[in-house]
Length: 366
Image 1 (cartoon, rainbow, N blue to C red):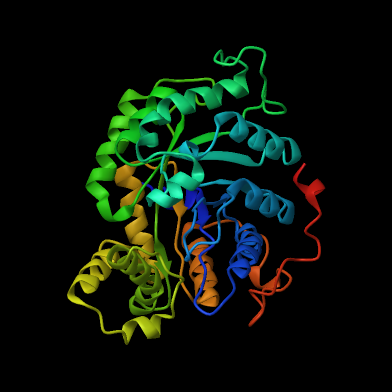
Image 2 (cartoon, rainbow, N blue to C red):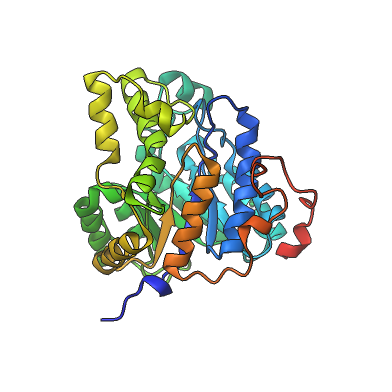
């Protein structure tokens, strides 16, 4: 059987993770720079995320950030992974994506999630409730209706310039979200790789229940998760330590912190509870040398029959992170036409030096 690895699109979700000792605003500039590098390497999409009141994440306004990314790139698809629909009025989301699609036609993806703020204070500030995710199906129907012009809840109200446009729609899902994506006839993004059997069951359920729609004629599955590639398996594993510790800290202290250096984490004395969450965070992740990762991805794509892979890896060391994505691009046979090191400002010691002077070349996306 022929391997599908080198014919499967690979994409990136960057959550604009903040780093210990650095300004939050730098994380957003790093995201725009990283998108340029991802485009140079041949990645298919570059998505940004939505988090509110999280010290470790700077990305709180994904459509705004997606606009900056699209303006700074030329070919790569740009989108959200995702806009959390319970936090917003569907009309406003439709208008925002209508503007994006109008400015960058044919390059915008609308990725949607159903999470709400993780504390009562955040939810109150957003004007939502803990159980708002239960209304996701109805919110999704209304949002799609603004694009088709078929929503009937608000007569004589139209979402301009969204009405008549068709940016691809993706539902970020675990469990019930896969059922909603199937019912609406939308593409599915599902992870993470650590819960492999549960993920595969949800994918099977999605494909079996999928109903063709104006948005998609057939099921489309994007599997997502952390993937780290380095010269040795141990070096690759070290790339995952900062995120694993941040997750363990959030589970034990209620705050998701900025990423810390791997060496600092390795020297840290953890409580038994912290150590348990930390080790669970590392378990089942996909990492190793190029040959090892190629074999693991072959198995993942074969078992899941995935149409695409969305890589979500973050780490403290940005140079090592870029090297991992460069190695992964080689493993996947991506057809990048530019060394990411030649992107202005991305040489040694310069990965984090602000936005390029040509940020305003939005016409290249048209």
